Image 1 (spheres, one colour):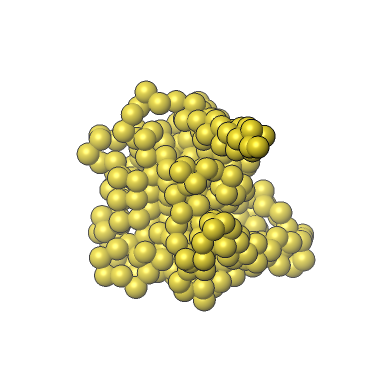
Image 2: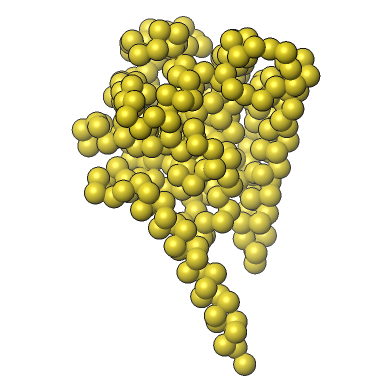
Length: 285
């Protein structure tokens, strides 16, 4: 399998042949950066961990060159950071028992160019070979430009495939913006209560980020616990860890839907909920 960027790589932790490694995929996640997979798609990693007939394919689109750095890493060049982050992502793939991990190695600037179709073409090639049942990517309301660009490229790649090769579910997940603002009807809650040790291990692998100045490990585990408690205001906690997703599947079944209009629809639903509640309370005697 040849990708457009010469330095890209397909890493297979258990060393089996590429076609077989990809063909066994059931769950796939497409992320912008190293460690995004572990933050946003643990639901898929967990679904495949220690399973004989379920396998996770993680895809990281960018090279990690522009990441924040401090401490041990404060004087690292972009090239050095790219090397470190690639090693960290491979370690996570081993710990999480991924079926495969694709490192596409694009600069963020290329991913954000609407007329650069190479990232989309690479993703389409992987999707066609893997044929996953579920795909996780970034949500369309994320506040990181590169994350949203990756989500749009993922949608475009999936739409380029024949309908019978598309997954049954496409989920837009949380990283740089929580999705607790979605109305409950629009939320797709993903239970990540189990195996907190594995969750912590996967997040902890990314030392360049954590000791480099960003406590993604604590923030991510805290968010999951907060969602579990605050998801329901009138009932006992049913889980100890939740992540929320935006269901993007309709974009695959109806190609007339504009991703922008689709995303704004969630905001409209939220606005209507706030408007309806306050209006009703003002009218109570």
